[in-house]
Image 1 (cartoon, rainbow, N blue to C red):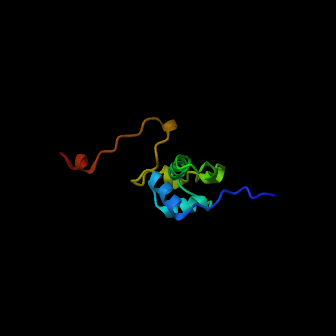
Image 2 (tube, rainbow, N blue to C red):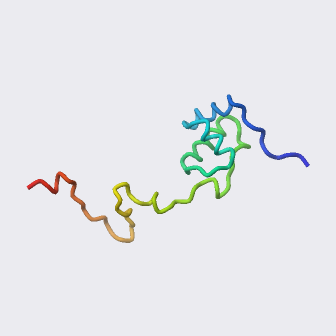
Length: 101
């Protein structure tokens, strides 16, 4: 039975894909090794693989995109993210607005 896996990319091809994907070659190598990646990065690497002529190297399965977790849904200031079912978000004055009188 023939091996159906695509051949390994050379260092030059790996760098070319990473330049098109705007990422580090180690990130492309990790993607090709099957490691979990950010969804945006996966999409950029897959587009770059297609553009460079390596469509057989694209992996499409549920594990290729990391599921969202609680931290990614939280806002950056530590308050919980707004949920549409709760109505409009409440106004929170900035520090300068609080001390203006």
